[in-house]
Length: 78
Image (cartoon, rainbow, N blue to C red; front, side):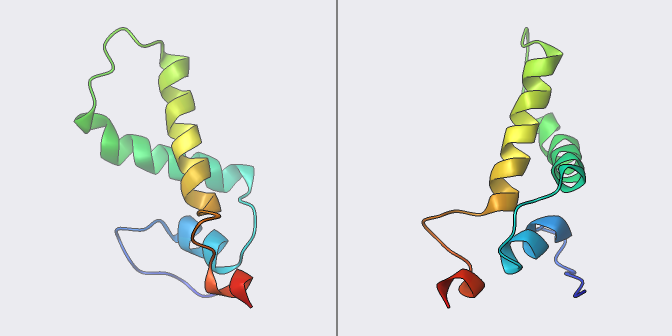
């Protein structure tokens, strides 16, 4: 397995997009935790329930891991 050393992009994101596959539940959880750790200081959630905040991070992680249908990976374009 190739390792991705870019600190700006989670290795799980790079692997899922490069391999043109769906993420595992563990990958979603790891990327959501990273997004929370790195982005949470930028947001003021206020009165938002904790489960809604966690759901937002999970949705962001899922979107990042799946890439975009508008911008398919080179492997999908073949």
